[in-house]
Image (cartoon, rainbow, N blue to C red; front, top):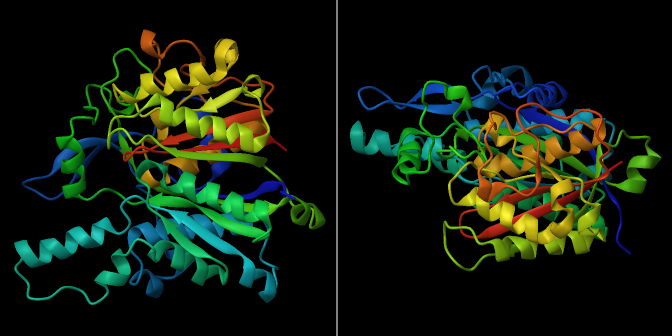
Length: 412
């Protein structure tokens, strides 16, 4: 028998700070954290719009001595996960319960800063050796391992690297473990650290990054007729997933319920999305949740603001929802917190859970002219909508490589 799965804890490190509630309130007001930042060193530094965690200082949480063994992506991850654990009030969990709790984490690039720094030392500074910590700092699974170490968790400790769907897949796979009874508690989410110079230049070469223009904060405009591309961001989001009955027995606060998960592969192209592939994930998620298309009131869209991606996603949603599409709210919070790549799914699932909890829907910021190719749903433009009646919502994550992940959430 499938068990119900509750979200009982939220943790965040973002360009809007470390309070999920405060960040969500800002997003509902259409506040963008994107600004112009210099990436790289002179004389090759480049200024790009970016959502950066400028005030992040993990020292108080992790201690100064431990930071030397942790890449920035692991620091972001551990702080968010510890915050979610405290938010769920799980400090009193005994050893046996901790030994069965699992960590499922997502990241697209992992320790890319360490990799770039090592190459810089070898090939630019021509040093004969690099830090002996380079491997353990840079490996993709370091962040999940640090979370397990910090919280003393002995269940599965797994890392998913599925480009922009990484943390959505991590949450989905954690959902399946709790739903099946394999675990009562899971820490799930993802992180992405500030992109090093080489990675930013690689994204620039693809010609899909938005220019700063005269208003860098408004450079990310999903579904807009004049959109010019995505804007990168960094941060981490963690969710505590818990068996519903287990949560009730300890009188835990429940933000929302995860009711379904669907995943698929486009098998068409590495970078060009396919509506049919996305539809397979969407339909699978609804079937898993025993939800009909007309039951969906809100979709937190993948919405990257790329020319190709946005219309394909809307086409998939129009097909899924049919006659109900014009009544379905849709928005893309990337317009405010940027595209967190491997952490995007987790921060957007968090936003979706908070929308269900508060009955407030965050907007797509800066959306004052909808592309006709993206029409057909009820776009939440500019600022959020308060006091809406939400019972069922979707969170979409569609990645390079054609990997798709969709989560169905219900109000608690």
